[in-house]
Image (cartoon, rainbow, N blue to C red; front, side, top):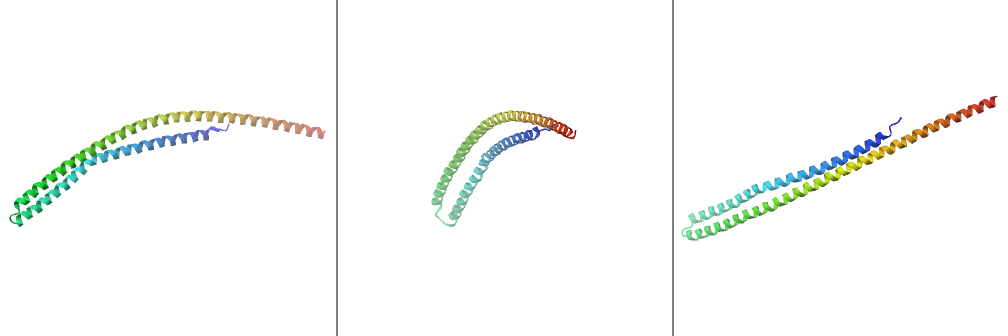
Length: 183
């Protein structure tokens, strides 16, 4: 007996493997995005530190310029001290705003990452449930298809047996006719 179900089973197995691989690719994509979000969130602190250091270096450079001016031009000390005080106040204000801006950005980004993680988890859970239902339905369809192919195979074998029997009967009738003609 010929096995007609092997190609059907193979196709269904390949389809299920493709579905499962697609699900894994989606999950890996989400996990990658979550890792990237964590990296970006983690890098904010170092970005803030680098930028703060740049602002502090600018303040130091201005102080150095004011020191040079003060030492080279006699009688400007009161004006330079007033200017130095104003510069320090402005830099203090800038650094406070800088810290607040980074704190706000970090808080907002952190909330966004948390929301993304929650939504991703919910989406992956829903995807998992849907893929499980799809695989189950797919297995049912495979079972029905295999049953149908087996039924058709049985019918083909029955028909082949009937054709062989009719062929034998025709051959018998031909032999009997040939014997009758010879006699």
